[in-house]
Length: 258
Length: 362
Ligand SMILES: Cc1ncc(C[n+]2csc(CCOP(=O)(O)OP(=O)(O)O)c2C)c(N)n1
Ligand code: SF4
Image (cartoon, rainbow over all chains, first blue to last red; front, side):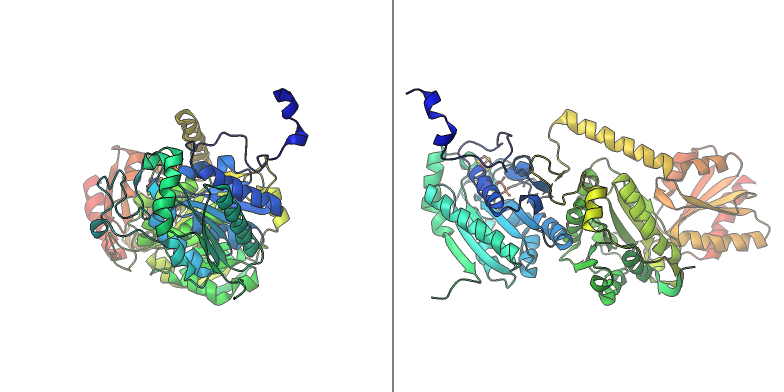
């Protein structure tokens, strides 16, 4: 058997969704951004809502998300994606609107926009990539950087006494009455990818049903910023990030009470 | 004839917004323009026309909401006063960079800092010379009556959509707060989704098919392409400069001396002209209506035959720089201003004209 015998349509078990463009991703090999992009686009494709969905790209490594996500997109100023999404959604209430934001974007410069969009219960979906660092600008400390964690602006480790504590935005917004669905996941193993996709789907379904703001955090690696190999970064993430940022569904207003 | 009403300038803007068929207003309260948001909320525009009115958490949020809705091709506006406008500058730069049409209103108050809530014209530099980062321009309209507050809402949107560029109504606390008779234009319908796709679907994110989608962005990382984009912007600004200059010339035909003033200052100068003419002084007023593009050519024409200009502004001397740029050193140009919320009297302005311009040039 040679390779031509294997590469045949009937043998195909996985295909990239057409809602990702042909542009090569600008992300570092091993980075979680790529998988997160794919999951969001797969959900949009499977729900058949691509022609009425508008995505908002942030400032951060995913600033070029609009190059890769094959739907109408707007690029927002640093931290302002939830306000931009609000602006779009209020005038196109029957469209689907989502933001895709890093932790610096969502939990530092854009904290006010995030909290108020959640608190108003804007009928949008926020996908939040938490990698504990500023990837794009070269690995500076983020609001989510763990205590003691090194970054280029906390070279001796984050000293919480002088640099403040890491911010758990996801738990914070779960307290707000405007959020209907809040979950935290990861995309570094097939099992986690499946769970994340299920949650993203639910988030968009809740938006369809006009239940309020749905918020999905993805704890992700930044192998470049953390200065590790992709494999080491995933292991480090499991050992250090997950205990501080535990995975699971934090809030689901429709969850059946046990 | 349209409906006549006695209204505050701020209310006239709000009523005009509903009647112009505006789709969305996003704003944050600040004196002396809070009546705009209050009036809109009071009027239930969601019932009158389906217009969205939302009080945002800050001016930073409002201007970014404007970005989003304008990017969807909708008629979108915000309003604020000086400190709030300062907060919006990053967003305005993004809107200019993404070439989005929208209407901004600045009811200017005295500064710097928290300053005062009283009227001022000290935001001229911010409005006409940039304000935010990068090489961009706003189309700036300066009303000097409550009537123009209403009319310029319509005009501002026309120009904004014609050039896909943000337009700004630069008013001040006096015109925002004073009451005058205003003739309102008739209700215009808001665009339907089909009309929107037809008119703006070529660029607006209204939802499209894959591989034929719309992107709203101001980012271009490749320098050569970013330069090309800037050339394109500059060509647009040149077209606006050539086609959209607006001004009013009052009693300039036989005048020897000219006031140059806009907004509230122009109203004061009109009174000074009356007082001066009663004394036999041949005074006139050149009132810029567009602060950008600036009426440079009419000033140059006047400079060929008049003896001097006095720029009157409620600022330390901002617009006077554009007068000097227009006419150079060939003729006397002086500035007179009051600031911090102080409004000059017509007598005071006339006195300065007599002492500083007329005496030295006889
Ligand atoms: C107003 C403003 N301040 C600062 C920056 C610089 N900047 C660009 S990306 C970034 C941090 C992004 O980090 P994060 O949101 O965590 O995303 P990541 O790159 O890690 O995916 C910063 C500070 C900017 N573009 N705009
Ligand atoms: S810098 Fe970090 S977040 Fe950015 S692409 Fe590389 S690995 Fe991913």
